[in-house]
Length: 227
Length: 282
Ligand SMILES: Nc1ncnc2c1ncn2[C@@H]1O[C@H](COP(=O)(O)OP(=O)(O)O)[C@@H](O)[C@H]1O
Ligand SMILES: [Mg+2]
Image (cartoon, rainbow over all chains, first blue to last red; front, side, top):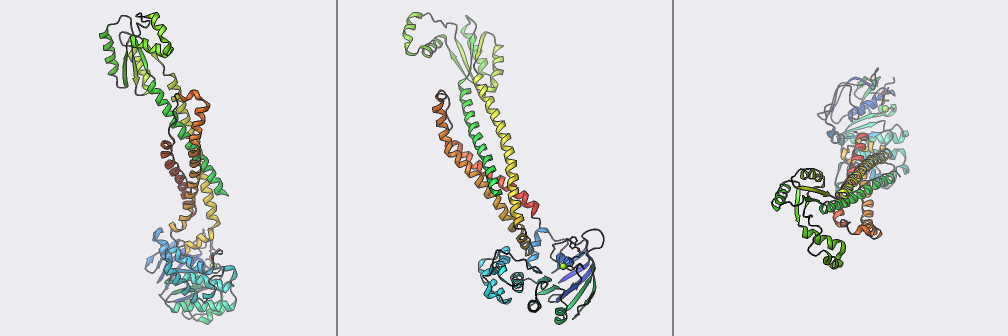
């Protein structure tokens, strides 16, 4: 599903943010990516979204080599990859329903499909009743659920989450993580960047630990390893 | 705010374009009328034989720039003179001169050219012909009008070009601001897989709408003012009325409206597309 072959990314001269990483993730896996601030986790996510170009190495996702992908193919590729951020990144002037529907309008789905899929997805993340609320009327946990619904509404094969619980209290963090696990059990490959030691240790998934741009540890049913 | 400035500049640009367009067209039509009415008159040497006159006529007719050659006999010239200068009070005159035509030597050719620019060349050619006494030309008016027309054309092109650049610049500015206001929304759109067209479309549309509004306002204004202006000029300067015949409004606007709108849309498109290309690289 995801293959990195000696991938490096250097923003400037000197120490690269990602340094010759080789990594393989199977379809249907759930992977935690942990590591200190500045160890290159977000850079890795951006490389997978083709938001950044690698300085060297090859990235293959779903059989498509990202390095050689044509510019006009990028939107199509991204539709197969859901993305969630620490800061939610919702459209502030639109309500919950519109934020989720937006992801489908962008792709040009007919409104018939949108009217069915959006409530369905909101139910999945437990926000069916609040579809009319604006983001500022929601708690952090609820906002992240909206973001999650937006990432899922197009049924991506891969879900990337960059510190999705970074702004949430422990209770909400657990709920979001539980939701991610549920989504994974429905067949989506999930990569979660996180600093949350307790959750990593609770969920017992594969854990990749990054340190200064390289993979320091990579273990099945791993534990959160301190720097 | 900025879009208001864009629309205003654009409107000024298209307004001037329409104004000069109408002016130049009218001047051209006046010049053309003047050109058609202005010819050179070729007089012959005294006691010339008719055969020689025919020979000269053939030589002139053979020139490609010549549109028409009219022979005016001495009698015709006298008749024309009388009616021109004395009108129906000519009877007394008739008595005095009787068969003694004072213009006996005034048989002539009136030569009309297709294009007023060719007239000078033709005159110097005719001067070389044997038997030609004198050539009178009255192309001064036509020439002046022609020059004025060209001058207006140049000034118009210069002003319109400057305004064109300013319009494009302002539209580009407007679109830049619209883009920066929606920066986060745009980045979200891109990350969830929006195509370039989906992201850029609305901004390009904004430019085009500014273009259409900026064109429609001045075109509409000119449309309503044109006829009034024509009537005003003709009544105010009634001397002109005899030889100025304004181009009908329909004829001008049939062309001016589509050209103006295309110009407006074009400016809007160019302004927004260059900006969008600069700021919205995926
Ligand atoms: N846009 C950027 N320009 C320059 N350097 C950057 C940029 N983004 C990240 N970096 C640097 O790359 C390194 C890795 O950053 P990042 O991938 O964001 O780490 P993490 O997400 O693990 O905290 C850091 O040293 C950071 O300063
Ligand atoms: Mg980060």
